[in-house]
Amino acid sequence: MHVHSHRPTRGWVVQAAVVVTIGLVVTEFVVGHLAHSLALVSDGWHNLTDIPTLIFSWLALYLEQRPPDYRKTYGYQRAGVLAAFVNGLILVGVSIFICFEGYERIVAPEHVATGMMLLIGIVALAVNGGITMGLVRERRDLNLRSVFIHNLGDALSNVGIIAGAFLIRYSGQSLIDPLLAFLIAGMIFWGALGIVMESSNILLESLPRGMSLDGIASAVLRVPGVREVHDVHVWSLGSESHAMSCHVGILDMATSENEKIAHQIRETIASEFGITHTTIQFEHQHEPGKFHKYMPEPAVRPTKSSHRRG
Image (tube, rainbow, N blue to C red; front, side, top):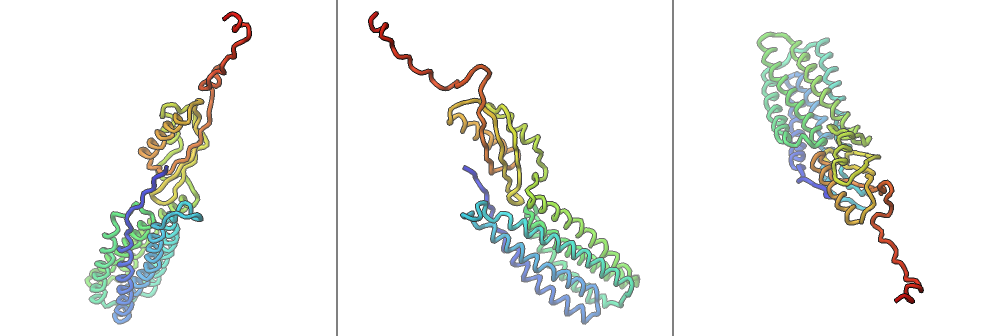
């Protein structure tokens, strides 16, 4: 029997984030045009990319809760991984877009109404910071981590807007804003690259991060009764769900004894590596010179001569 754990959905956080992000995007577009602030308009476009990201993540959270069926025998656990992969690609595009906007601002700097820029920057920081804090405990989930990284990048972008507004007002140096944008874009790109690589590994059924085949095989070999282990395959069903299959060599023994060894292997693998879906194929071996160890010898029929003697 395999036990699968399903944690409670965090969909309400993502749903609330969609609503407040739409409101923030409209506000930044309107105020940015009124204040002639390219920074706010750019941040509005940046936040606009959050909406499909959040919708993908919410849809993935919904699908992950659906039980397995006759066609999706593992359920929809990889829906979150697919969403994380798509969101990671979006984040890479966002970081490139921010760098392009920063370059444009260096080439053609514009006078900015720093007062309105500062006010909306504070409002945006409160929104994106709130979403980020709501997801900080869910970073182990690859899907939600992509949303966390995205909104953390938004929050840092807002900090850059606020700091840029102060520095531009008191120093008059308009180059401060694009330099901050380059720094934020670099942080977003680095986080997105990690998400794309990890989600790709899961989709390609690579060995889960932090595990080694040698360590897993050694743990199996420590179980009493196990003589050999080979054809070990370990992969991830989702960001927090892992599976393993292997061939295990044991001596000829009764089926009830097989099950005891299988149970110990599953407990060992689950406790040491968090692998909760294990398929074991036993291969029976004989001790040298001892064959059919558990088969009773056939009964010897009495001969006629023995009857006569009786």
